[in-house]
Image 1: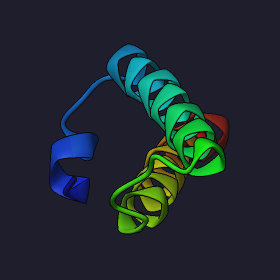
Image 2: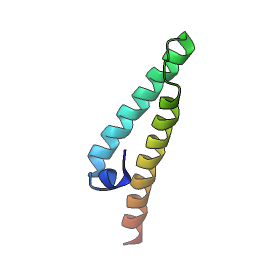
Image 3: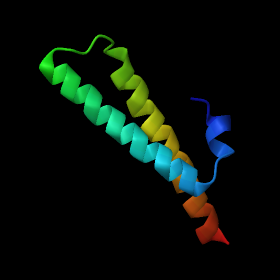
Image 4: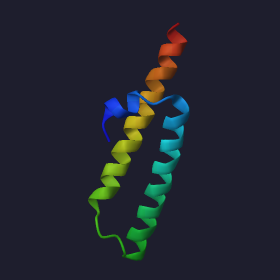
Length: 67
């Protein structure tokens, strides 16, 4: 996921994507606990994507507060 793609989305779409990423992270953790996870790198990717979305949302909040 590219940051340019994320910056082009509105806040509602970013929040929906964040919810989807948290759900995916939960599912991946559940698969890891059950011993069914094939790609452990996906956990790291999802965590980084969550951080990217949160960063962009926080930047927008700070920009609004600065106005």
